Length: 123
Image (cartoon, rainbow, N blue to C red; front, side, top):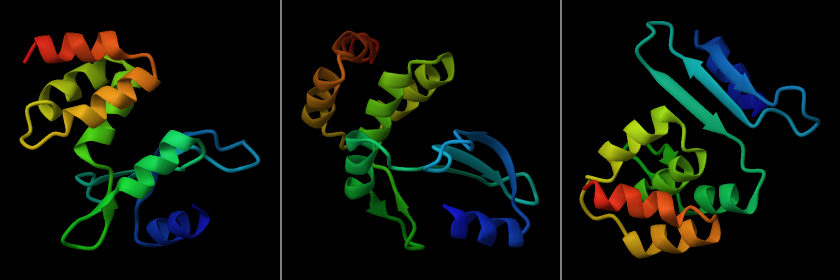
């Protein structure tokens, strides 16, 4: 993440939030904000099996940047379960083409099936 950080800082971005900076393996999460304040870029290091799977499954955007799938974002937000995540889940879960079988499998693995059932019942 060091090279990415240096490049973004050189481009005028600033770090708005960081988690795990003191860890020997480096930060787990860094939120960068563009100079105009409009663009947020959140970067999470892949340090667990789930995080590595999220990176492996990531899809390329038109610009070539790889981003997490909708399904993986849903799983991560089900696990985190903060008020902001619950609001994000409402919008994410309404997007078309979601592979709910994948989400259900991951929810079971992470013991968040009840949260998933609650989400699906609210749709």
